[in-house]
Image 1 (cartoon, rainbow, N blue to C red):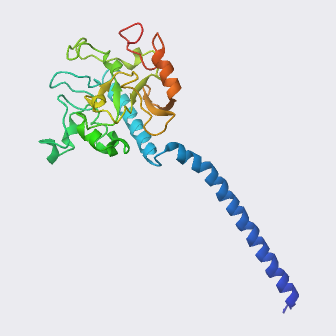
Image 2 (image 1 turned 90 degrees about the vertical axis):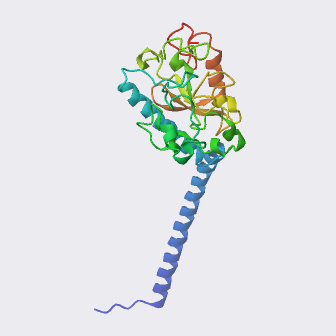
Image 3 (image 1 turned 120 degrees about the horizontal axis):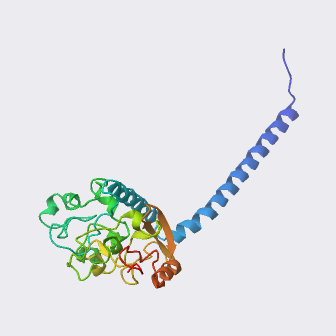
Length: 258
């Protein structure tokens, strides 16, 4: 059967087809515009595009490693690498602090991390380093600890004083003894100060505590429970100022966590 289609009918069909395509295109453009409006503020707030994503992922890996270590160590956290005697093994390295860029480790830099208690679970050195931190040039090269961009809360070792005193025999806190699983365990200190990286642990105070390395409003922290949380500067400072135990000060050996 032959069907004849008039020229006017074909023209109408073509016009309808073009109209539909134009409408579809406008919808796509509008959708893309909406997506851009959502994404751009997020990228702007990060300040460093993908670097923060890498950093958060590093903290998550460290959280899983800490909890796996604790599950094999009667619930105890690894030693925080608070300044200690030679031969003492902490979460990041075995004392003294190895420099992966100096002999004898510069010929096999991975060996510098192998002495750490968490190397069993995280064998990639990049997982210990923040892209923004290692880009600070001379500040990074001047620090004693070039193994990690993150530091552990010295509350894990009960803030032993004075340094090298071995106050508690290098004992560490058990996770179950810490008053809140949301307590802050690891963070990025200020990358522009070599003294903040003299070892693998810090006080959580205003000088050595969390530094907003990726955003101006706060930073990402690893909690004792293994979660990564974004904490605003205001929230962090409020925890610092608390007179009793807080999310920053949580040593189980003292009533005020200090």
